[in-house]
Amino acid sequence: MVVIMKPGHSKQELEHAIQEMERGGVNVMISKGAETTILGAEGNAQGIDIEKMESLPGVERVMRVSEPYKKANRKYHPDDSVVEIAPGATVGGKKLLVVAGPCSVESEEQITAIAKEVQQTGAQALRGGAFKPRTSPYSFQGMGYTGLDLLEKARAATGLPVVTELMSTDDIGYFAEHVDVIQVGARNMQNFDLLKRLGKVNKPILLKRGLSATIEEWLMSAEYILAGGNPNVILCERGIRTFETFTRNTLDLSAVLAVKRQSHLPVVVDPSHASGQAWMVERMSLAAIAAGADGLIIEVHNDPVHALCDGQQSITPAQFRELMAKVGAVAQCVGREL
Image (cartoon, rainbow, N blue to C red):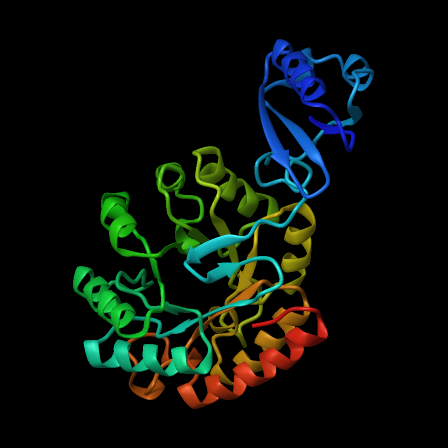
């Protein structure tokens, strides 16, 4: 249930409304937007008399919320959330965020060279996997902590904040200290113990949609992090599993629109994992921006043919430079900017 206060309500009217809700047996979340103050009920709101609430001075209207996600719900938080990933780098609002880098860290020379290339082209953050979840146990699994050290060196050389995937709850403390944005991969989207622990971390969390997750399931996973006390959640659409085999996954751009209607959380798109084809990345990126995405996370490699991971979906720094020029043009058409 949400209680929408009238514009210009007094402090006393707000406190009275909160007290009445608490008497009904719920905790009250207060969300203050540019023009609207909303009170959200956490818990079972059956004990609240809606007619009485609506008659209180300062209350404009009362609505029941049917969706199971509360803190992620736009009804509780009408304004778009803007998440700061580093000083001067945000996602949400008018500015678009572009994250770029290789699928995995392979060497200091490789990750630093790519970081410098994408930074000069306009990327605001560096992606790179140190711990890699792979379908085959014989595939390259990443460099682990050594890879994290190399990401830190690339950050020092370029100033780009680092986005990388967390695999285990055992590593949360280390990631919280050394990583700017903690990524939860598609396979861990419903690792609820991990999500609960990340709710206690004061770091932005990039939450990728699961391979076969519905939009509601995706938002419920975000709810775990938000309910734990961490408001800095960024959603990432990276394609879902369908019957189609031509592409690696099926990019669901309708999910961008659906989520932004239902939730205030920023949404970025990963066209690299969604398509699995480097030649598709540019057009899928432009389509994502046109559809309302708040940013992109793109795989860029200086030698895709010899990449240790996902070379077939990685574009070169030169291709990334061409893409960024076109992203800027599309962004202007939809009222956004890089």
